[in-house]
Image (cartoon, rainbow, N blue to C red):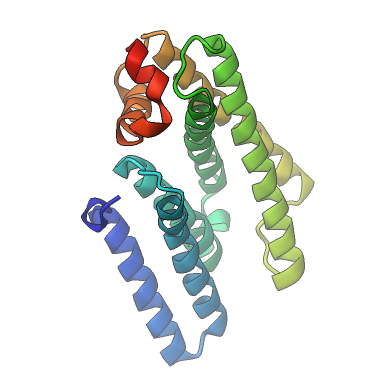
Length: 214
C-alpha cells in the first residue's frame, strides 16, 4: 500500500496521538504518554507486517484497523470511553469481529489459491469465522495480561464482560466469515463482498485459480 493511500482519517489519528504524546510529556502525565505511544506503535504495525509479507490491504481495511486500535486503546482506556458509554465495547467488538471474519475468509481462500471449488462456500466461511473467533479470544487474553501487568481495567466487570465480548465476537465473526460465502455464491457484489473482491484484486498472485475460474 502506498503511503498516499492511508487517507485523511488515518493521518488525523496519527497526528492526534503525536500531539497527545508531546502534550503529556510536557505535563508529566507519563501513563498517558505510555498509552498514546503504545497506540501509535500498534496502529503502525499492520503496515509494517503487511509490507514484509508483501500483502496489499484495501484502504477501508487498513483504516478500519487503525480506527479500531485508536478507539480501543486510546479513546477506550486513556479517555475512559468504556465507562462513559456502555455501548462502546459492544460496537468495537462487533465491528472488529466482522473485519476479522472477512480477513479469516480471504486467508483461507488464499491457501486454496482462490480455487472456489476446493471446498463448499459455507465451509470457507466457517473457517474464516473460526479464525476471527480465535483472534477475539487472543484479544481477551491480551486484556487480562494488560490488567494484571499494568493495573489497567480493560476487562471491566471481569467474567461477564469477557463473556459478552466473546458473544458479540462470535456474531460479528459469523457475519464477516459468511459474507465471504455469499461473495463466492455471487449473492454479494457490493458492501462486504466488494471489499473481499478488492483484496483479491490487489493480491492477485495469491488467488491465481480464482482468476482463471472467474
